[in-house]
Amino acid sequence: EAQVTQNPRYLITVTGKKLTVTCSQNMNHEYMSWYRQDPGLGLRQIYYSMNVEVTDKGDVPEGYKVSRKEKRNFPLILESPSPNQTSLYFCASSPFVVDLNYGYTFGSGTRLTVV
Amino acid sequence: DAKTTQPPSMDCAEGRAANLPCNHSTISGNEYVYWYRQIHSQGPQYIIHGLKNNETNEMASLIITEDRKSSTLILPHATLRDTAVYYCIVGYSTLTFGKGTMLLVSP
Image (cartoon, each protein chain N blue to C red):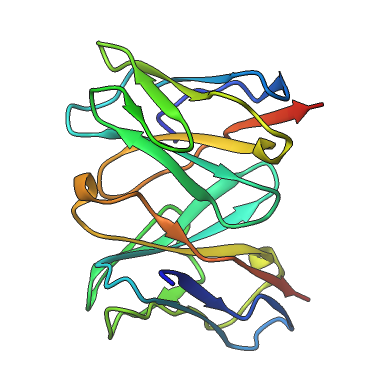
């Protein structure tokens, strides 16, 4: 089944403890992206990647890192999490040629709480 | 900032057509119009997209005005399971989500 898989689904951590949220897609998509969703603020893009070893900042990149060493994986790294990074996170992927695709495929989300 | 304007909420009776409007007056020539929906806190789900022509698939129809400054998503026979937040997005290689329209389908 074509899908984007995020892990973990739920995570509670303490301030300053480094964590990684994994994202993997099995559709050979070039484009991958991370979003966070907060009440009243909608979905905001954190980082995106057009292809392997190519990443760029989205609208809210502060406090986050990403890497794209392989086409299928796009992990989100919080080096020193803070409570304001408590949020619902989504990973998404799509083929780069947008007129041949069906838009983004999203993962099921990761609910992160930083205490 | 999102490039689209949508009403914050709409109601629809079950079995009736739901027509969700979207204004995108600053759309560029190569930007597509996308519609997604999000049920509760699940990952957003792609519905349909188009460039200039009207489009239809098994989920919905997309009507784009000739000047491309607005569009309408039509769910022909809304069901309770269509209750969700619907996002209208314009873009090409990266998509910016606004706050969407909360569609409530009632019995």
